[in-house]
Image 1 (cartoon, rainbow, N blue to C red):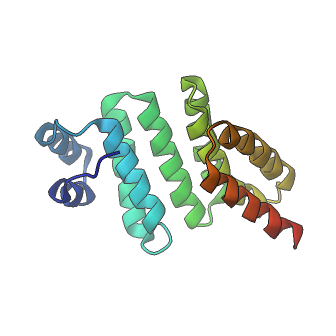
Image 2 (tube, rainbow, N blue to C red):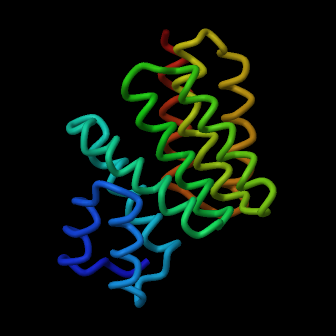
Length: 168
């Protein structure tokens, strides 16, 4: 993914309506919409704990982007963004609904790597809800996918999670 120009990044973060998003898209036709969705997701991941308000605004923008383009991939990203925001607000049931929707989107598209990323993102919500067996099943499924992609950083994260659970 190429870096989004700073001016576009700042304009995107300051959108307040779906209409403003449409104007942004008209003014930045050079930016692929999926790249915009990925950028929003990365921003949410980096901010959700320190600035939940901004993460919520970005999640709304991701949802507007999904609705504007009727793109199943972007819908999956928007759902995962919503899951992250709901998780950070300790709304674990809502987070799981969003994550499940994202998993379904990515499964339908055959995007197993995106599915696995979403599975790992949803594991903590499952644990907080006492659904440890489901969390373990998600970890096993994600591990198989990450192994196929040789995604060593995500495999290491799963290993750390498993070590943490073993010492509880």
